[in-house]
Image (cartoon, rainbow, N blue to C red):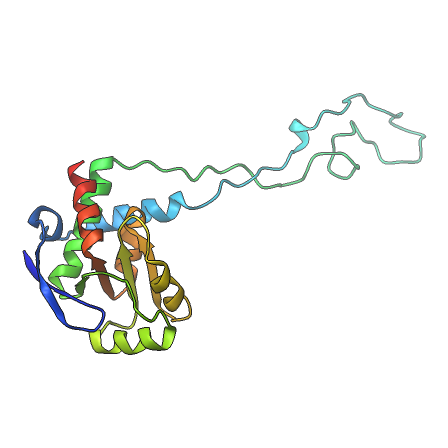
Length: 208
């Protein structure tokens, strides 16, 4: 697949040949759904459990007579109504650590990239380097490039520092290095923008 490379000034800067095995895979809703579900469950933290009656280390000896003491007939000090007793109906430990085959995860990322290319929502930029790294300048450049309502920009090893600073105050424009590319963020944004370096990193990621 051949696509035109643009500069930040919306000028053509040659073409780039995208690997069809990565950017021309027919998307499948079931695969994308599995990967997104796995990704969102994976980010959930493990709930911390409270100690209940059976977990508290206190004596189980009956501490008073059944009758005549003038108090309730308690059996042990592990009851929730005592200080130091177990928690009644406390939170239980739940481990949100699902598993998903690596091949399925890789296929999901290929399908997410391919879906953007198929819909015409994939833009390839030569570089993110800006001569004047200011938010006002970048807003004007984005207007010329015709990005969608929400945009995800992926660079190579590191996001260009000037571009990152200039884009930090622009709502609905997010940036990340190629190592952070994931299915959920790609599908969540209307437009996907890759640099030449990002394309090289993503193709090397699948071929490595």
